[in-house]
Length: 247
Length: 247
DNA sequence: CACCCTCATTGCGCCAGCGCAAAGACAGCC
DNA sequence: GGCTGTCTTTGCGCTGGCGCAATGAGGGTG
Image (tube, rainbow over all chains, first blue to last red; front, top):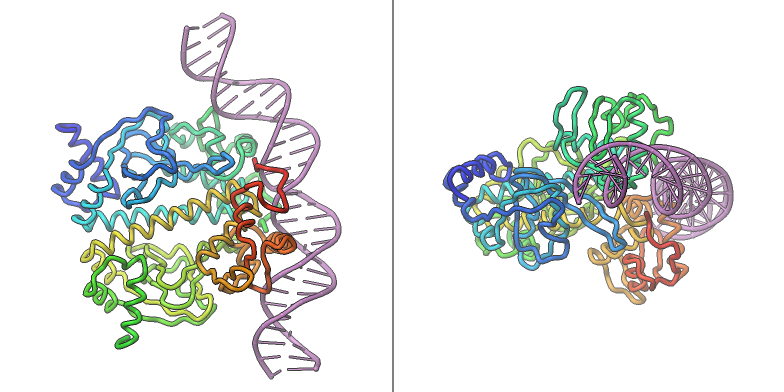
C-alpha cells in the first residue's frame, strides 16, 4: 500500500466521518497501521462468535452485517459501504464479534489489529471522539428500527427500509432512483423482520400503483413521495390504508 | 456537593464502568464538572426531540428510556440504574435526544454540559475509551433485541426480557428472585413489542406452571431454569411448545 | 441453445397474537 | 371503612401476515 494507492486511501479516509477532523500526519500514521485486505463476494470477513481481533473500514464494495438466531433465522442489521466502519467493539479484549460481516460483492477493507487501534485511540483523542459519534449514530439508528419493528406494520417498515437504502445506495436513473446494490426480497425481509413472501406481495402491490419498479434483486423507486407517505403513515398513499393504527 | 456526599459520589463513579480505570485526580476533576439533580418519579429528565445538551449518569433511582412512534405507541429501550449513563450523544452539537428519559421513582443524576464533557473527553483518553466501550455494549444489546423481535415469538421474548431484568435488578428473596422494581404488564409489553394482554396471559400461564409468581407490578422468578429453557427454545420447558420454529 | 439454479410470484389455509369489553383485585387516600 | 383510580385477568372474535407448495421468470454456463 504505497504511492498512488496510498493517496487514494487517504482521500477516502479523510472523507469518512470516522477520520474527519484529523490532520495529515495523524491520518498517515493511522493509515500506516492498517492492512488492506480483499474479500470475495459471499465470503465472511469475520463471523459471529469469533473472538474480535480486528476492526475494519470498508474501502470498496459493501458489507452485510447479519445475526442469526438459534433457529437459523437471519437478520440483517445493516449494510456498510465505503468509508464506513464495522466491528468497533474489536477494540476491547475478551469480546466476540456479535455479528457476521459478509462481503456482498468483491470488497476491499482496511483492517487494524486491536492493540494498534487501542494505541491510536489513546494518541488521537479526536479519533476517539469520532468513534463515539459513530457509535452514537449507529445506536440511534438501531433503536429507531427497534421501535419500528415493535410498533409498525410490515408495509410501513418496508417503506422505511427502502428509503434508508435509497439514502445509502440510491442512484438517480431516468424514471426514478435505483437502489444500486443487489437486493433480494429475502434481504428486504431480513431487514424488516418479515418473510420474503410478504415482501414480494407488498412490492407487487406498490408496483401496480406505480410507486416503484422491481426486477430480480433490483428496486427502483419511481414515486418516493408516496413511499414517504406510507412510511410516515400519512393519508397520502394511493392504496389508502383504512385500518389505521396497530395496537 | 461536597464532604461526605462527594466521597460517596466518588465511590459510585469509581465503580461504574464509565469511569473505571481513571485515577483519583481525574475522577475528582470530572466530578467537579458535574451538577447533581433530583427528579421526581414520573417526571422526564429530558424528552425525545429536545436539543441534547446534557449528558447524565444515574446516582440513585432508575430511569426508563422510551421512544414513541407517531401513532403514540411507546417502546421501552432500556432501564438505567445507578452508575449507568444515558444520552451519550449529548456530546455532539446539533443533535436532539432520540428518546425520553423518565424517572421511574425519585431519582438523582449527575449531569454534564456538552462543552464540559467534550473537554473532559479530550483530556482523558481513558474516559473516551470507556465511553466507546459503553456504547459498544449498548449497541450489541439493542442489536440482539432487534434480532429477537424479528425472529422470536412473544413468549420467548418475554422470557428473555425477564432474565435481563433479573440481571439488572434481581434480588434474592425466599422462594426465588424478585425483580426489584415497579414492573407492570404494560412495561413488559413495551419492552418486548407486544401488548399488555398478551403479557398477562403468558405470565398467568407461567404462574400456573410454577415458573414465577406475579403480583401487581411485581414479578418473582421461582424457576429461572425453566425460563432460560423457554428463552433458548430448549425442549426443557414444562408447558412444552410443540409448534417449534417461527417462519 | 438447452439446462440449471436461484429468485420471485401467487393462491390458499391457518394460527399467533391483537383488540376490545367487562369484570376483578389491589393500593392509596380521605 | 369506603371510594377511586390504576393495574390485571380472561373470554371472544377477528385478521395480518406466516407457511407451504406450485409455478413462473431470468441469468449464467457449458
